[in-house]
Image (cartoon, rainbow, N blue to C red; front, side, top):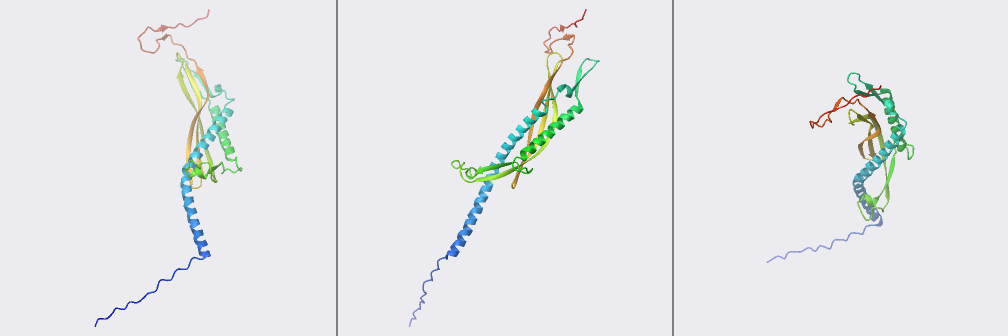
Length: 245
């Protein structure tokens, strides 16, 4: 005789109770925190290249303006004859030049001190703190790269810091002019190192510029023969010295 298999009846699983109001609040709170942290990470990655680009452009304009104004003020009363010493050479009647070292050192020191002071004034413009320079307020839409919302959204304030290292130097450039004549140009070469520091990011840039001080015309003796120096094989010109009666 066949035995019938017994089937055990299992009742339906009990339904889970709905979340209480407290549990919903806690879950929503942690989800809100997670989304905000992810948003902050995205914003942080997006803001760095924009911020550094703005900082470099702004500080370059500030530094260039400071250098131009400082040179105009410091060199306005400088006499080039006080800087350049021209010496006569009796053997070949050629003229040589050199710097007046005391005048050279004075001008370089004045320019360096003045530029450093001006840069210091720029860094103190907010709250007289040497660590503070410029505050940028960038719209959130611009940070996220949205062309439609580029000028909308909350503005995020970001501070930058300015550090200056000034190294001025006087340089010359010689140009031949006519027969044995020399055109001497004087420049102040300035090398300014700027460091932009923002939270968790910094960058350094070097600004090189030449500011003209002035120029001098140094005449030379006219030779007895002058062939033009072009190598055309023409007859040289005989130049006689004028004699007074």
